[in-house]
View 1 (cartoon, each protein chain N blue to C red):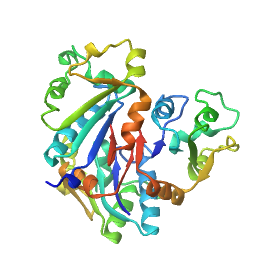
View 2 (view 1 turned 30 degrees about the vertical axis):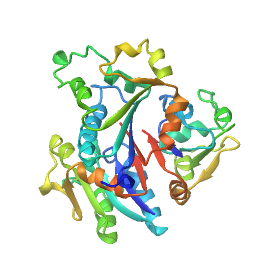
View 3 (view 1 turned 180 degrees about the horizontal axis):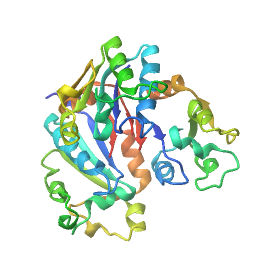
Length: 123
Length: 97
Length: 118
């Protein structure tokens, strides 16, 4: 594939898990986009960061959890997972609370990276 | 970049989060319930004047009219669906849904 | 300019379907190309043929069908989201189809602009 054909696509994760399906169906999208060999990244902002925290046990609510999926995203071509620093701190979380290694950055930095994208998709 | 916001600032943090992320020089277009932010004299849960220091704020006229908003904050540019399309042509867009 | 329109919410409950339609209509009127309209999440309910909205209100399903047929726009509901919600090939308005998320990826990559409504 020609380098010019590779597009930057960023998934902006703002919805909390389980209460609505957006985050879960968002992950399904990312797995499918993986087959298209694009340059993908994710940004967790606001309640979206709750979707990627460790220790989620959904057995009691009878909903299939999706926390394990985060572990394979790198293999599917997600090169960066950014977490908005302010959202994380507001919610009493630290970088160690996530199931995968995340890059903690400022909101302004996320905004700057969004500007470089071919497309951004909200979940 | 164009950012669209369709949630009321009184019930959602959407506009607040969007305005933190949006870079200087970018545009924020308020649509649907997002237009409740432009009611002049409303409680400043999100300060539009602060946002407008380095960004342009637009609001969709059909949504403003539909909601009976009679007085729009000064500085907000009111546009129609045509204007929305033009903004989406000028730059990439992201929906803060 | 080449656009992809992505709709994340179902009809009536959210205004997203109306705004997406009005945007699409305005974009076509200005001579832009809509590469694909893609429905995801509850958005897949936008193109069911099983609904009967009251006659004194807009018919969101027919609007999508008409805009797709009149302008030759590929109008697609995500198959995974549809199956989850009881929508299949038998229950779709004319001029629309059901297909995989790959159709979204393909459209996003091949368009100059993605505009999302949710």
